Image 1: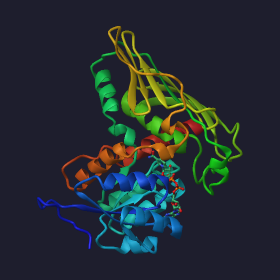
Image 2 (image 1 turned 180 degrees about the vertical axis):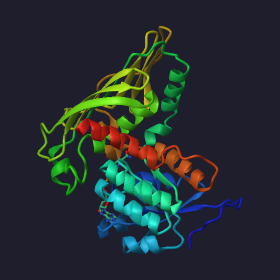
Image 3 (image 1 turned 120 degrees about the horizontal axis):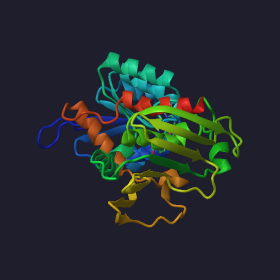
Length: 338
Ligand SMILES: NC(=O)c1ccc[n+]([C@@H]2O[C@H](COP(=O)([O-])OP(=O)(O)OC[C@H]3O[C@@H](n4cnc5c(N)ncnc54)[C@H](O)[C@@H]3O)[C@@H](O)[C@H]2O)c1
């Protein structure tokens, strides 16, 4: 039986993980590091993978998805399945009286996001949409600097997500690259950046974009560009691709008339305030970490987001990214796709 009470008698949240692939490892590693979380078990229809994963983390291997959802000890389910399953899996978990953490993108359309929102409202349970970048200290710092007008008058920002994925990345997968199952470059790879640009810069008033499938043999777009007008009047540009060799880290650049900042992945690479360089990191365009290989992602930000989720379940914290927040990036992406 999963241990539900901590040494100081506070309630623990018991988790199950659905899907045992790449992203499930971030959830498992993070949950095992959180004091008031218990990871009880996992399920994947790929039995070998399920066994390997559950052995690796010393947890129960469920025989079916239903078996996990029927387990009364499980309080919350981490949904780490292919994107097109997120809506069904989340609704099933909520209907089974579980809280849900949904990997990004929360859904592959705003219509599906609305179905999750509806099920969430009816269940009274917590739903967290994964967008781990919001939990980066440097992202919080940039938001604060903007609030203090630390860059002077900001006129422009740019978000660059020029990644590279091999042909095998798509050809060896039954769902990646499909419009309805994966959604393409912005729903899959770009959603983090799209979420963070609005989270940092404030609401987007207007967006217009162009997408194309230029290099990969897939149905969904592999390349996208967009022009953005924020409600503040600031203008922005977005570029994203999965066929931009050799693939560079995501960068968000915000420039005012007295300073600027460059966020590289989740860390500040450059920061200039009042003409003085405060942070001057290496900006060499090396092929680094997660630009081309998501398996290299570390679980630290997932841990912070999962802690926030547990806090929301216990009524001690407000969810930073609930299902309404999870829908915001999807709406922008749909507008860019046109
Ligand atoms: N937050 C991040 O930075 C991040 C990184 C990578 C992937 N993701 C997201 O995580 C999701 C999964 O991606 P991945 O890279 O882990 O994929 P993956 O293919 O490595 O893993 C998905 C797993 O789900 C399993 N699965 C399929 N149908 C299932 C079902 N009905 N029930 C349970 N399991 C089922 C598959 O067998 C597979 O093992 C995607 O939506 C992706 O966008 C997020």
